[in-house]
Image (cartoon, helix red, strand yellow):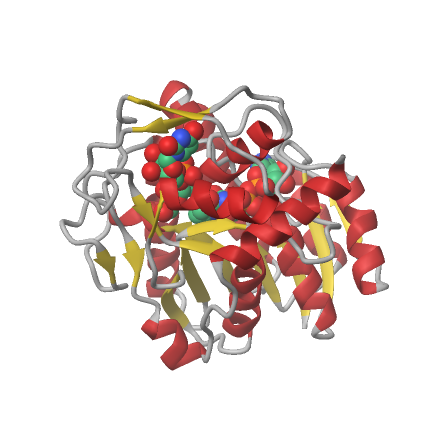
Length: 332
Ligand code: NAD
Ligand code: UFG
């Protein structure tokens, strides 16, 4: 298939591009490089032997989108482009609504105007808000008590996609709700290398290991969990990328929603211990107060993705740590 990948030089996008090309798909990438580097394109070429066409473009630039879509007839758009820093979205909500929601509306207009009816969208477990359970199935209600403007943009985009599907029977949107992506490509060529200060646990552990930050602040050890720290469902980014390939093979008209997670929970302290075991390095940490909006515990029930897409995770936290460390060595 001919696929446009927005955000294709980012963390999850780049790993997905590698899987798509390796499976024989024809890929083009659109990214404004606001949170990624052009050098990722060289890494993709080295890994796959293919140099995908790259548009340095912004999804807020409607004229540019029209130009790009009038040049090629895509079968599918896989839409990763978006801002994702939760704390920044609380400080600058309009930036997030503009970039994520308006940007997606622009993209959808460009698609529909050129007869492109298939989209795979990067959503997040954050759309479930605080559902009152720790194991998440796709049929839980969404949109209630979402803790950040970032999370609300994902919910709003899901609703927009549902409305389009109601109005246009041939439209197909596959909504993939990711849990916590971690790890890197086993080659060490691509991984998570955000511009600026990261928010998520793994990139912060990486910065501590590199000596850029003196220690990790753990947000609370008084939660009602096994060791008092929060529990999340960490998923290796290569497994996640393969989830997109599986979704691509099962595109059908209407809305399809899948949780992409491992189904297992791991605490913050267990993540630190796993990194220390894999690297042989101590990660200094201190316990600080709870972070607003954090839930004590969540994990995916990924059975629907297995049943309908034949997809499940294959890699472990230890694999993710080994690949992260390998990537860090390559960066050094
Ligand atoms: P990332 O920041 O590494 O990748 C996003 C890419 O989109 C970046 O390369 C960035 O430059 C690009 N981009 C941002 N705004 C753009 C714009 N206006 N026009 C063109 N390009 C733009 O993030 P990621 O971790 O790879 O996440 C990919 C998607 O998955 C995002 O939509 C994110 O919200 C979603 N998601 C991520 C996580 C996570 O924890 N990483 C969890 C759930 C959902
Ligand atoms: N944490 C720390 N210290 C840090 C950073 C994180 O203790 O410096 C803890 C958090 O409190 C949380 C866990 O590590 O308990 C994971 O935090 P992340 O910020 O890495 O991830 P979240 O689960 O908060 O959120 C992530 C993405 C969201 C997405 C959500 C989906 O950032 O975009 O997963 O489950 F919506």
